[in-house]
Length: 412
Length: 110
Ligand SMILES: Cc1cc2nc3c(=O)[nH]c(=O)nc-3n(C[C@H](O)[C@H](O)[C@H](O)COP(=O)(O)OP(=O)(O)OC[C@H]3O[C@@H](n4cnc5c(N)ncnc54)[C@H](O)[C@@H]3O)c2cc1C
Ligand code: FES
Image 1 (cartoon, each protein chain N blue to C red):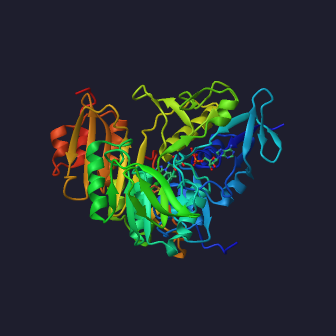
Image 2: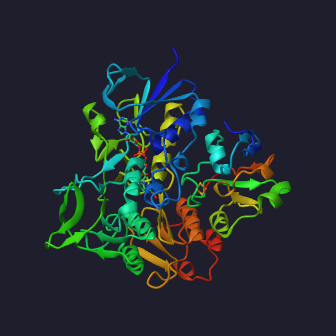
Image 3: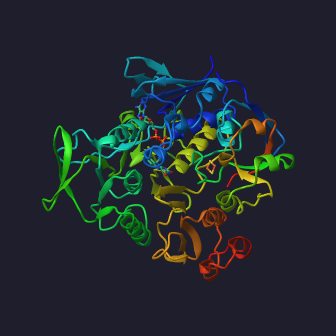
């Protein structure tokens, strides 16, 4: 009998688990079970190029169908409804039971529901999967106005894409700055300025009490009773990790499905990767639940190596990107815990700058807007634990490459 | 199935060669990932955002393939393995003129 890896969820993490398992030498069966109709695809374009109508579903596939055929990876459409760890089986919604030798949970996350009346009206959309993006797109022909609820990355990207298509767009954010949960005040202020310059009606500190309409949404009622008329609502108020399967199977859940540095749960046959997990980051010592492709890929590679008996731990630096209007933001590392910032370029005027974050003299993260070079510099400098000279870094005349050689690897 | 348009060879850092056929104008990143060529990750899906698809075009081919764009230059030049003919595979589209192209992979993607 050949051994079988069963992967639950067909998204970014599982696509990488599939590819890495074959590279790492797994010759047994690989069974990929996913509840979406398609093979794994890229989600990031859903709020960017795909929403703006610049790409198609075929462009989104992470790997072409031929890849799965050639590598003998079987894709099974279905929803896993339970795990029996004693029997080493998973149950599907169509009643079938399938055995596993190793189980990898890549169940991702789902949109956090908006807890107000009217959230179920037609014309109100989440933005997590391709079906969401398609239904937003299909409503665009008749829509002139859109309200985006939530000023996080996905909300702001959706706002920018809809604005690009010519809609009048309002963004409502409960906090007193956009991107509050994910970035520093300086970057929030920059995106605030740009969105207003691009004609977005951005309202901070604004709560929504109801979505109104007769079958189809026509307005958004705010806490002060003002009603904003609209043809379309996009809700982007965060995600919740899909941990219920693991929880019901008795595995530890600590915000996400708890995995160790090798991607293992406490059951030696069960692993997890991607948005559904949390783990203790070796750099900061903090438990993190990250929602980004880089993390999904890194954890997936680690799980595959562990399954195949190679020694690998979750170590690559997290990074992220966001496209809005003519801005390409690239983020290297995590800025949590910074005690000093250094700017290269001016975020208050132009549209190109980098903000570097230091902790105890060491570079830990960088937000780079339209500065690919600064981003790649940061990726390398952070990974190598460098402490580049702050004065030279701030000086636009300094060649960044020279700082890679000159900077010390010490603490200050 | 479309008719074959050509073949591209990816050469790993240790010399292992992977010959990949192409039938359409996919990018070299898509060709590599869809054919299980190790050493090209393509984490950003081809948006020139991640820099994990660095390849070095064979000298004999650089005139046909073309040199890197400004964005590619910014992304690649910080790599310790950057060479004169370094490109981002996601920004290089397969076409009949590139039938027979050889590209080398760096030891590490950044
Ligand atoms: C609009 C949007 C824009 C984004 N932009 C960026 C970006 O610019 N950069 C970035 O790094 N990240 C971005 N992200 C986040 C990124 O897409 C996620 O981090 C990534 O998809 C996580 O991969 P995953 O495999 O963990 O989960 P997912 O890709 O969510 O895949 C999980 C899959 O599992 C399925 N599933 C769940 N439970 C079951 C079950 N019981 N049975 C069967 N199937 C199940 C789900 O339906 C889903 O298909 C974006 C996300 C969205 C939605
Ligand atoms: S795939 Fe990300 S830069 Fe080419």
